[in-house]
Image 1: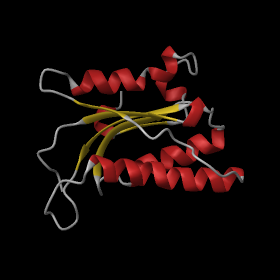
Image 2: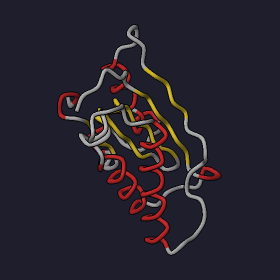
Image 3: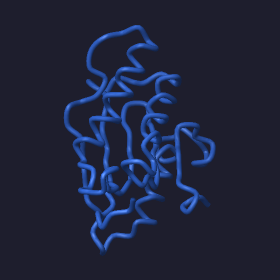
Image 4: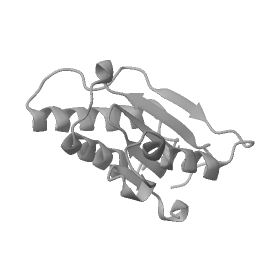
Length: 145
């Protein structure tokens, strides 16, 4: 259920900026999108070779008593993706850096502009000619061009 929470712009990086292979990027994107409409209203997610950007609003928990915490949301995404990627690659150890960058979008900031900034990230990095060409990008229908 939608809350009065403000959108979060979140970025998190791999441990020691390790580069995720393509199959791992797919898993991370699946984990980022998994809780869309459950714990978060996801606007956009992009999995870059060594980091992830997401913009979302936390939703009310299933009992509708409080807004899902950012810590719980991030622990869920990072924990599930680390487990699945490590299993896929038959590796052990940390996948993600402990800290994440989190910025609450203020009313003076345009959500559409921030979504477009994230959407263009693979293009700016030279990984795709257009955002639509980048396979590890998910954009909510209302923000698709």
